[in-house]
Length: 347
Image 1 (cartoon, helix red, strand yellow):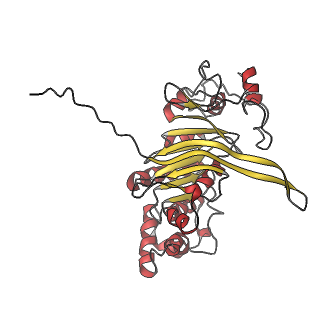
Image 2 (cartoon, rainbow, N blue to C red):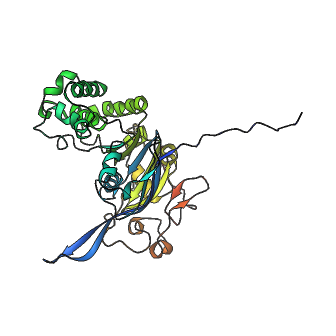
Image 3 (tube, helix red, strand yellow):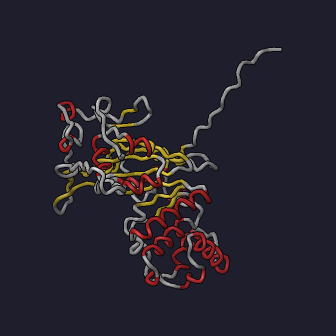
């Protein structure tokens, strides 16, 4: 009998539903009646990351860091200046979203949807819930008439709203209920990827947890993948599996949520984490207050864009722009000093 040796342990590598490579979005600055271009606002600059099927990836940073622009580029609400957005829905061949046009792009959007930040302005006040939630179904020829009403009723139930509300208008609902309407609309075509852009920031604190729990329940029930854009790190810690930190249009750190919150590698991440509220009011508050403003995307400083605000900056930081480097732990960081710094996380 031939000895075949020990049985190999098989590991399952999660499928990358989205692979973003070198994504950039630049807005021209023009002057005069001839609209002569004099500069470019680099809102998103060479952004690279990936999303595993079934996970929730957080995209965080200050206002103006480029996270919302990134989200809109992923869905082609904005056309990217450069880069690839490889989307693999699993049932068909992967495609580059950045290169799609016309009918091919429309077909793809069934699998990629967005939940907007402001539930008050994202809903047409002249439409009933039947119109709002049913619009994607009508636009794609999925259902009409009685079948449409049945599907809308099903969607409303799934987000905790009563089907008889479908004849009402948005003004009759609270902020939390309006966001549920927006979620129902995003789920109408059974998407595989949902980009949630600050979905709870405009809501009262009392209803934020309800909305977050709803998103988590729907993810498990429908096998959804989320990109969760937020500036509220306490929310990100609660709902996200991994986190991408952005500063001045670029990715500065990527890590599992637990690793990032316990031991950040980038000084900017450390500063963000220092602002997370602590449950114990008597705990020491070591808040890091960054000086100055976020780097101007139209006139970025030399070297590392964060160096004018960084207390750890050295000459190399002012002279050379650091690359996004993969550490031995598998974490990614854009910092010359990452290997030598010991930064404080959330205790």
